Length: 345
Image (cartoon, rainbow, N blue to C red; front, side, top):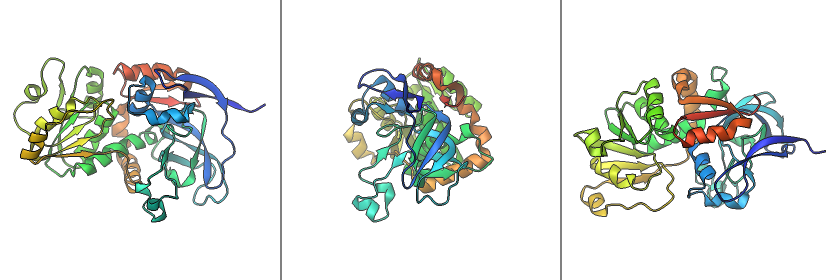
């Protein structure tokens, strides 16, 4: 009999996920490691896939696929040719798997791989007891970073990459649109870069409470007022869109000073209208931001080692894998910030 384990899988291109019995991963192949998952966060991307609301159609050919790409764990077994890692090592994992064959990879520029795959999207992920991953994607964890904090590494790298894209410098006025996990990590990284950060949401009372626990003060709920009125006078140097709502793109452009930068971090189910005349006449820029480099991953792990405890309020719920669908609903209803699943609990 093939050993089985529980996993949260996307099985059909429609609303919903399933808690299923699946076969345990095979022994790791050359260059791979098998990881016992100790903590895995529910991401906004996972929520989009759960709702099947658009923007993740590329996942369909991989179904049934186990989700989960923000995670940490311990190495249980190593495949042939793996150096620098040992059984029992604690790691977090870069979920973007490069092909090693395209023009960029052959040139050693792996961050620009043209045919990458994604753990938890187009290959089996970490919402399960075990997961296979390339050894090269593993980032060793210091003893001072516990498993649930380590599982925040991936979203924090998204925030760090967004701040890099926005070229944030000390003294910049920054507006973050969307107080979910991505917005929270952008705010954390922008503050670390010396910016003055304002964060807005709409119907996000619980997530704004989380941001207060992270020591942010300029927090605005747009439930009763339009953006410009709620924020007040003055424009921003950089605006970050982390809502996934297309209409916010033009709203964000309207909050920028001349020569300002709008960084788009959300995934949108439909096209966004853009006021091109404003973009032109005020010499604004729109930039997209997504995955981070290996160097940024290392920098974020170092940050967690120094001040991870300050970021623990981001994790509002901790659930066993058997209650993962409850966690998805908590995130969907904007009650939760980061839901952490504990597959071995």
